[in-house]
Amino acid sequence: MTATSKARVPAMEGWFTTDESRPHLIGTQCTRCKSYFFPKETFFCRNPKCTGDEFDEVELSRTGRIWSYTTNHYQPPAPYMAPDPFVPYTIAAVELDTEGMVVLGQVAAGIDPDELSSGMEVELVLEKLYEDDENEFMVWKWKPTREPIAAPMSSQHKGAN
Image (cartoon, rainbow, N blue to C red; front, side):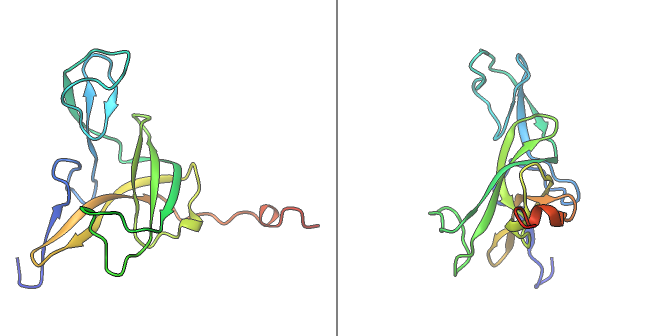
């Protein structure tokens, strides 16, 4: 490592893979009912119809669709590491393609929340959450898989003749 480069490390160890070209969230799957969990479950199945207590660690889908989203305009309390001054950020609830479960995460930097929509396809990416003198601390975020499509003129001017 050179004097100007910093190590890129997970902000939360064990929550996601660190392959930046194809990152995955790391979850678990109940061996009895096959339900998926994120973050990982290790004690008992959260499915109320199951009494399982054994889990396989699994890499979860990298892709999904936005179920809901919102922009956070207030600074969360510690241990969240916010830039100074605080910059609002968008959070998306994403339904994973294979598992069908909904996972929260920030939306990638540079994505205009006005261009997001429910049902939009997104993929998992890793971005810097914060840094110190030695490390860049990485976290998962959601990024649209393609450029947002502008709404047709007819829907932009509803009610206009």
